Image (tube, rainbow, N blue to C red; front, side, top):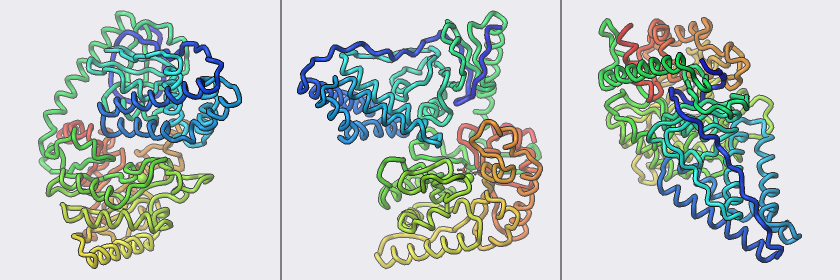
Length: 527
Ligand code: PEP
Ligand code: MG
């Protein structure tokens, strides 16, 4: 077979290719021994790095541009280099001074209890090494085509500098599924496995990266290669079949039609999706417009983004969820630090009601955008009816304020996520909601008391648990009896294994990952 290494899938897909070992070893630099020259060398290296990143930014957009923008903003901030400049004035060479200053920053991120911040440490290391390369006069080039990149971790800029047009894959000893580079790999369809742990993989010359099984096979023999050829052909055929369903209405075998909408996080995703392939947007996770470390988007910026979703969808409905910050999505300055259990803490509507200024800005932007299409607004993490009524009052008062200002606006219907068990058990308390959307991701973690981001309890965090199914049945039934539309927008809807159960629960509307549209419609046709 070849040697098998088990890891965690960060991006799905199957690829076989030669290994390119990622080496970011740096050339040794000879210090000038002159304080002024050392200071100037660091200033020049910083400027060169900013120019280089700026040029790279011009070639990419969306998430990728944000990552580079983060690095440019950090490098432009004089506070970042200040400790290094002080060290230089005390006689330390520019490269050593820069490395020391960055080590302190990186250690801060790496020691964070939060996966998100730990994943950002890779961005800082990437920036550190880019500046060090310029200091040593090394013009590194990450060019690699059609190869499997293997290393401890992969900086996002190295991903962006790689030509993926002829395929390729990534296999990392460390890495994380929540890192920026993992998000980029998913968006670009590059198979990626992280957490392989075993350094002996470095000695392989060829690898098969199998995202569907979280597996890497080193130096595959003929049997493994023919299995790869077979699996690859099957995968390509499956994708081909799925594509033929893309523009068909989502229909069961018995002819029953189901609404299939999509989940999105950013406007840049829209370019790759044809609105004719879905029945609208079932969940827009607005918190992803907010970047940690960046200024909060103001009303105008939010209005323009929401308007884009509505214009893209035409007359089809667009459900925009108000900020679900907190939990595993912290934003410094908004989320409290030091929560002992952030998933049970100040998250979603709990946070926005505590920060009315932030909530009102968003609600005003939404009410203004509402005139451009069929907008629905959804509140996350609702637990008690007062959260819905207070949100409704705030929305009404924002609309009244806008009307008094003479600004075009409309009052969109206000619905809620059903993701806290209290709501799923007692949906009758929320009869004022215009609609329900079941968040099976959080509902599952709260019902099974197993964190959604902890691999050690992944087996318990099972959306197929009968307790979760019973709650979905009850919510769907309550909705039918009381004319409240019910949809489901958790990941469960994107997983064909749960499709029949969800239909049996009585659901007729699902919101799925855009990449799963064809697959879900194809599976539906078999039910
Ligand atoms: C959910 O909890 O199922 C959901 C859709 O919301 P999120 O995954 O953004 O928490
Ligand atoms: Mg949720």
